[in-house]
Image (cartoon, rainbow, N blue to C red; front, side, top):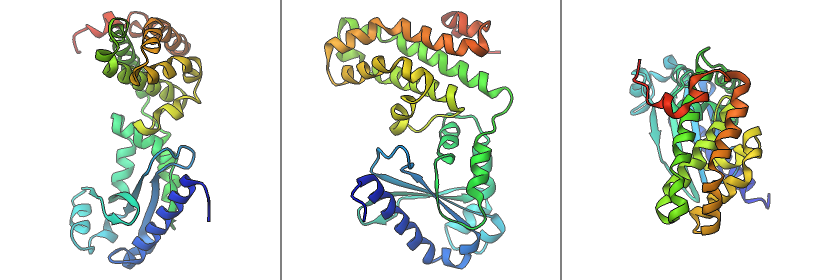
Length: 273
């Protein structure tokens, strides 16, 4: 029995997952099912929720009862929140192919899923699909790194500019503080890993990145600002331009001559092409 609450939560989640697979309808296809514990991730356990991905190949799913068989055959996912004593569970059921396609995407949700795929734990995975998902999560389309970095940098610039309101009155700037923190952390994580985690793990993961270490004090001040610390709010606002410059220096290693990096505010005003 572990005394660590996070380890205890993970063990409770494992037991729930094993019980799920031993019951109806999954026991009939247990050799074709992959069940991955997605939340909490092993290294960043700051959550009280539990999430699983359950995947199965479409031919094996066809004879499953409602809602699973029909949904998977029609290339749809099923998301459930089953009752579990002491746990808040989210169970996402989909075909193996569907998860591969999702992990090939570059939407914000897909980028978060890419990070999650690298930090899952297999509760049951006889077919070793988890390794394939992690490999898929590492593969980005050739144009994606710059396109995503550009979007994240422009988001950072926009949200950081909104911090100016903190210098006048902290209260109206709380939303800006949260937005700026999230934008900076996502950029820091993507620059290091090619993905970023869901919001609940964003700050912890970002703190281990190059950019996150450089702007750690600023991120701490944003947290204090959200908590009502006026002095921290003013410090965060006054350091905003330096944070943008730190990000520009790191991104400049690959994108130094790009207009979006040199003049982001002007670039953001360009008409879509």
